[in-house]
Image 1 (cartoon, rainbow, N blue to C red):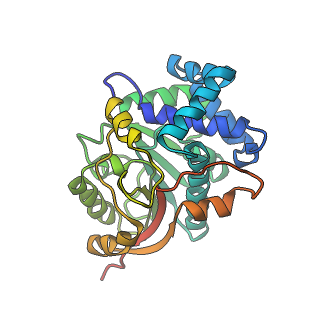
Image 2 (tube, helix red, strand yellow):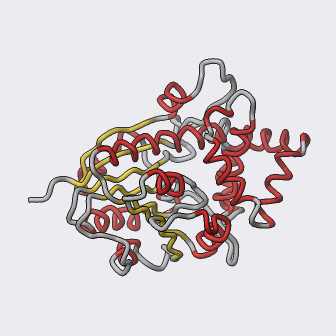
Length: 296
């Protein structure tokens, strides 16, 4: 992330969601509520408005598709599918009496905003870099309900658990679902391990954790190209923590977690995309759901 600006990746993901939602073949993947929230966020900044102009310009739109094929084929549809998978898991947690949901490094994701309207008795918290969080808060304005708490914090300097312990909105005794989408791969391994340990200790209630992870760019289990690594270094967001799906279960056990499910690329495609939707789909990043092991 460049100083004074919201995350480049946050804009790219949001642009991909809007592009997918505006495509006649895939618009059913993005709800009207999500599309409205995404457009509000993009329309609130110069960078966001530039991204929208790119989508409206036929030449620029085709150029974006070409860049996608060169870096991560099918990534825009993947963004939408992974978000639907995370939403399904979070909704399942809510049905099983989770009382608060915390999104760590939320970026411009709109799930907490949408669910906070639907479940006014629950608490929804977002933690993200000040530049991103403030821009998002300004974009949503008075449309954000009282049970949604957007908290700006530099997570490279402060532990999310330290922040939560100072927030009156956070209930350390409540059953909690934590979400960390598209974030952990940008952290060092030690930082990732510390987060798992800290999250399991910040609440005495039942704890669920939903996150995404990715194998290395050299892995045979991804269709990421060699250009991706150069591009991520250029925008200041290189990948650091990578892991194969086969390594997830033993990794979680060491951290004191039980694996609930792994949703890989082919699962995302099968679950959420119609067979009539043709074209490449990203293979690599996957969704993981787990729970802190029961305490003695």
